Image (cartoon, rainbow, N blue to C red; front, side):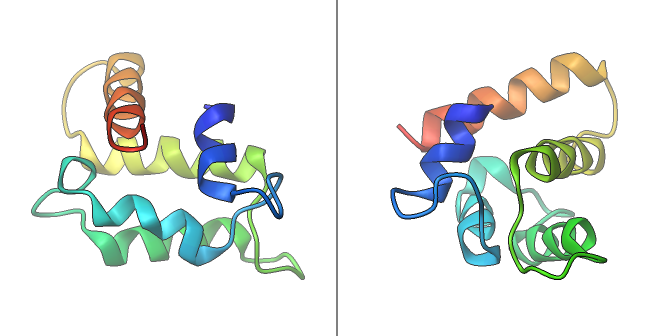
Length: 95
């Protein structure tokens, strides 16, 4: 998970993600579905930075946001298996 976080964060600020960096995940068809699309990534990001004075997400918020996405995207199945499947999909598209 930390490798994914750093890949999305880039070189300038690898310890934080902006909304645009986080929402890149919504561009990939394997990471969206008919009821969870690109706009939903933006909503999840805003949920996790609400209450902070900054507009970026740290690793802990990122992990929580990924868990939220998995719980919304995968309706059935084991939570751990769904999380593993989603992380595998992220790794596949971010090679």
